[in-house]
Image (tube, rainbow, N blue to C red; front, side, top):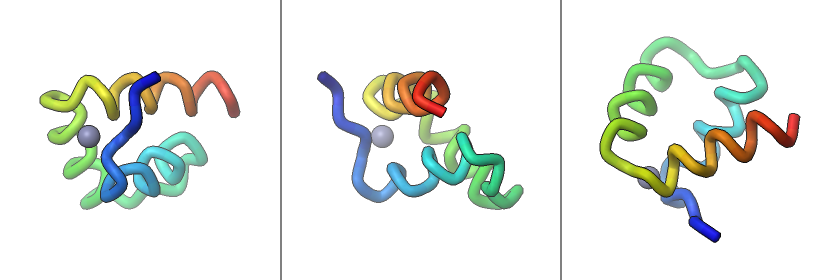
Length: 49
Ligand SMILES: [Zn+2]
């Protein structure tokens, strides 16, 4: 099972909850483009909520 980067895991949770601010959202999207582990975690969090 993939693990998201610790620095981005809180952002993934905020994003799934719809509480991510625009600056962090842009930062996270840019990171997701190059980080399969966080992309997988983002999908998992979306399914869990
Ligand atoms: Zn990552």
